[in-house]
Image (cartoon, rainbow, N blue to C red; front, side, top):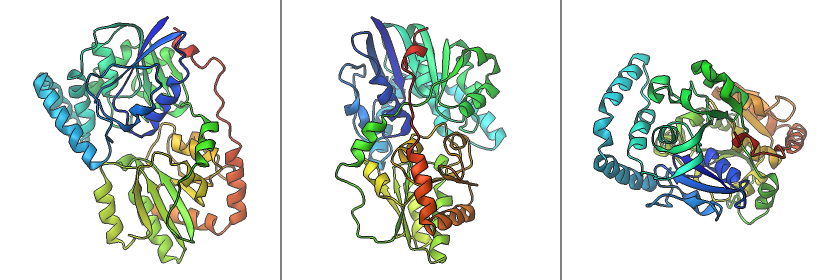
Length: 398
């Protein structure tokens, strides 16, 4: 029986985490002994982990990692951990060196800096594995590289590596020593290889897995919009982070309102930018027009009921939210960025525009006025089938 360990940073309600849960269902307990370690020991999706997967965390909180309360809880526990295990002191030279490099480039990425500290303060895992898989960039990758005893090691990359703020200096060139690297799309692969060209022979595309049948089933469950609004409903699903560029969507909603378009924009997701975004919403007089609804355990009834799904982000790896919207036949508007370009064919199964408030507004307004075009685009999107290889686990047998 093959012993496999998966390591992920958190198990919060985001795309990569849900993709991991779907992947874990493919490992039958008759052939594999699967273990899971969550580096930061927190996340609400823990209850959805298949029963046969062994959770290695000695301490764990099922609180959200994106809500304010969840962030406070997480930060308190992590501060205690990094001081008890003295990682913050050992990593001081690393932090100073990479902070200096970020300052020279004109942008500081605090989370990218701290992943090394999080990794170095992780829980010791005193077990040997046939294969260890780091399922996210940053902390989990560093942890698998530095602290896991395994015959083979693999790493997943879910984002546009260059644009997300990673670098060889932050990584300490660790990817050079992984036996296999999986990227979730061709563009993600190219972005990674621009930084690590020597890894070309060990880098493969492994698309996120989704269960379309289950998505359609959950879309029929109770839930969805509870207000009595009778205008057009626009939906976006995603974390409230800089990557998702919500400021452009908020400005686009202001333009739509100024144009007299009867529409309301809803966002399902949580994140550190909630207060900042809500301030902007209130300042523009959009309190009843652009609504931050928080995370939902079952977002699919909302997809089913919306008139338009908008995914205007700065960059993506391969968006699971877009795949979910396509599965449920939504009319899509996406920004022209990495990841999105591989998922939507403009004018065929959705529309694409620049990440610009006016362009988003114009594209949305035109679609909301053309119900026939919306119907055709949504119908085409629903025809997409995300079939997986019959031997989907073959890439892990190396």
